[in-house]
Amino acid sequence: MKNFFKILISVFAVFGAIVGALVIIDKISNKNRIKGNYLECDVDEASDEEEEF
Image (tube, rainbow, N blue to C red):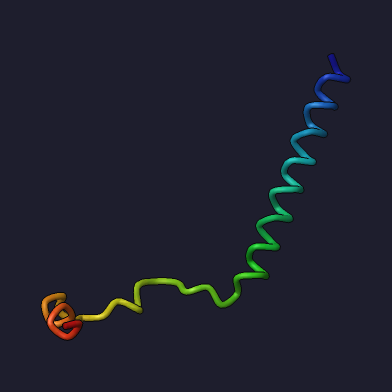
């Protein structure tokens, strides 16, 4: 029974290490990711449709 728990804990540790590494890689590769809603503009949709034609 002790061996089963050792294997189970080892599997969880390896899984946690893999997930942690993926999170760190994602943070490093997306340092300049756009955060928030600051790119929204206040232009009316009707004025946009009129300008297209």
